[in-house]
Length: 128
Image (cartoon, rainbow, N blue to C red):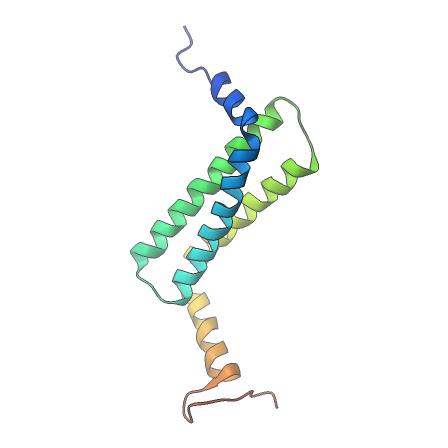
C-alpha cells in the first residue's frame, strides 16, 4: 500500500499555477531583498538567518511547483525563467549570508572612499 500519494498535490499545484506564482515570485524577490537589507543595516545574526531560511523556503516551494510541470513534460520558457529566478534568489541569499563579512567590508569601503568623507562630514566624490 502506498502511503504517500502526491498526485492530488501536483494537480492542485498545476490547477492553481497563476495564483501560486503570483504569490511566490514577489515573495522570493522580497525575501532576497530583505536578506540584503538586513545585512547592509548590520542587523543581528538571528534576523539575517531567519530571513535567509524564509527565502530558502520560498525558493524551494517555487522549485517544487515548477517540478510538477517538468514531471508531466511541460517545458516552456516560463518554467525556465521561474527556475532561474528561484536559483538566483536562493544563491544570493545563501552567498550573502555566508560571505556577510565581505559584504560589510565592501559597504564600508564604498561609504568611506566614494560617497562620504567621514572626517569633514561632507559628501564628495573622490574620483574628481
